Amino acid sequence: MGITKEQFANLEIGNTIEFRSPSRHGTRKATRKVVGFIMMWGHRSMTHVKVRYEGSPCFYVRAPEIIRVL
Image: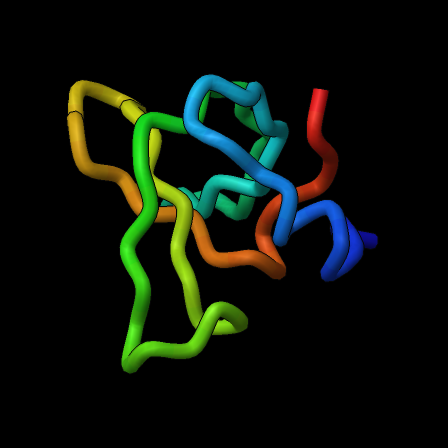
């Protein structure tokens, strides 16, 4: 189960999130700080959260992949 729409709407840069990270062998949980957002097609519901992950400074996490806000 992921976060609610209200929790997603209240996310800010600097918040810590726990999310499902896809890999070759399934998914695993990861915890990272939010460093930005990218809005797709002008819809808040289609916004992706930007985190630093596995050496990539621009790793985007979709809303359904977020497990919880810490």
